[in-house]
Length: 213
Image 1 (cartoon, rainbow, N blue to C red):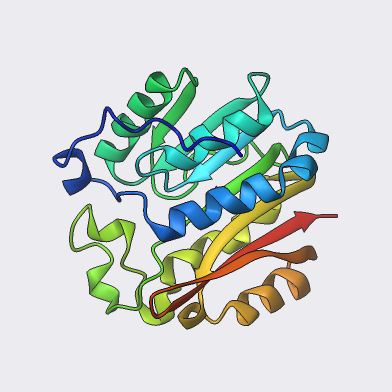
Image 2 (cartoon, rainbow, N blue to C red; image 1 turned 30 degrees about the vertical axis):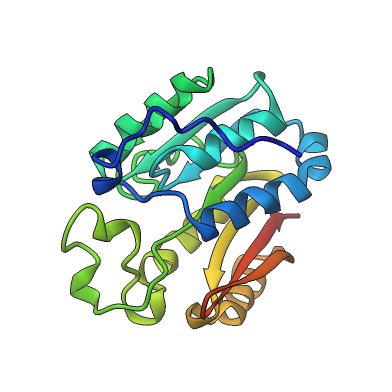
C-alpha cells in the first residue's frame, strides 16, 4: 500500500485558502493505486493534475510513475499553486505548478502529449454565482448539477491526451455521471471505465477513467 503524501508542512491557515484533502481525495488516490499496473505500463512522460489544491494527488501519482515524468498542475487559485509547489518540495517531487484557469495556456503546446490527467473538480451543486464567490469556493462550488466547471474542461481532454493516455475524473451522483460518459464516448470517442466508487455520508462518489484509443 502506497503511503499518503506528507502534508505535515500545511497548517490550518493554508487550509483556509485551499481544499483540505478529504474522502473524495482519498478515493482518487485509491483509484490511482488500484490502477497502478496500467499506469506503469503507459510509461507516462507527462502527467497533469487540473485543480491541484494542496498538491496531494499529483505527489501521490509520482510514487506510481517515478522520476522520469514531467509533473504539471494547474489551479485558478494562486495560493494553491504555491502550496502545491511546497507539497512537492516536502515530498521531493519536482512539480511545475501553473496558476491558470483549468488548462488555459497549455494548448497547442501540449496537444496529444499528456499521458495521465487527474481532476477532482468542484462538484457540489450550487448557484452559478457561487463558483467565483471566493478562491476557496472555487475548489468546491460546481454550479448547476455541480457540473459547470467539469463541462468546461471536457472538450479539452481529447486534445491534451496522448494516444493511449487516460483521464481520471471524480464525480458524485448529483453530477449525472452517465451523461458525462455518453458525452465522452459519443462526442470524443474516448473509452470509459469505472475505476472505483464509494459512499461518503450522503454522497455516492465515483472515479471514472476515459482513455484515448
